[in-house]
Length: 436
Image 1 (cartoon, rainbow, N blue to C red):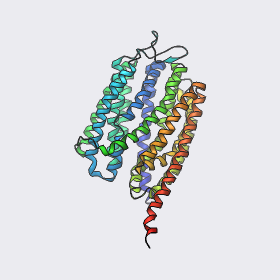
Image 2: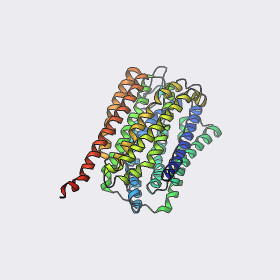
Image 3: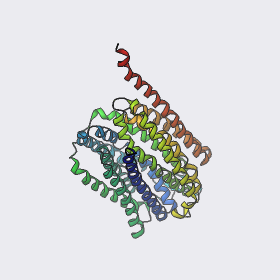
Image 4: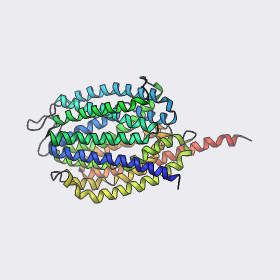
């Protein structure tokens, strides 16, 4: 009981910080949804779908080695932090320039009565190059720098500081939205882009000042970590692609107002993963240490994490399902389908809880290749399935495809992990069998 108490306290602090962050993000979304209106907010959701993919590419997955290696060797912090900053700078520049150039090839993002698409319609709202540049800079490069602060503190075992970083950023973003929309009456996407980018720049500078006492980063590129980082990044890129392809395809076949409702529902459900994320951010460094002398040694901890994750995700699902009818009162009556979308999507939380521990153990033990094979394969095939299902029968086809994808990840993750566990145990037993 005494041993369990520190873990429980750590989890409560971790989940509390993520819960506060998720709540503030939902409030931020509610403020923006009301102030921008369904059409402008729908455009923001579609652009955010693209930047959500780009932010996973930014830094080329270097955050994994910062968390994994620093948790094992704290003295490596300065070189790993510098490795992250260099890769964020180089990849971020390419992503901002390339992203703005690609999206600017369409003169306008617009909607009409039956379809919204990336084409010019004189009656629809437009997004200029400056707005796109600010959205990409703020939501890709600056967000990646801000997230680096939390990762650095987690790697060093400073959970309290990591929690403060998460909560501080979330509440700072909410304060920015409240100040912009409620006090200065921001009502367009172009105006919000300026506020959001400026706010994220301020938060990134605060994060840099916060990390400064821990050691000056040694700017370098650790070539031995590039492959693992790219494999790690690719998993989140493919998941981001799969997580946003439905938004983009739904935008082709439904009114932009429906995209806004679906986007809000997706954000609510994604934020509800916090119960799993809070557990994962505590377990991942421990799994890395436990699996150092053999992957099989960390399996008992992964099984305990599975039980906890299932209990947490099931509770989250039930709460979200019951609260869904009350959400339109928060976001506005124009979001007619919000309750239906949230209820249909909420069950995916349980499936994510079922595969999270297995995937985390594969990553923490250094088997990023296997982890990437599972997640990338599922998300690549899932993206195609999701696009076709959405095209044929949106939104019901979209929901069915999402459950099929998450279920496939559960089966594949545990089958692969148990295979590696058997192999690891046999390798550990070989010296004993070889000795007379």
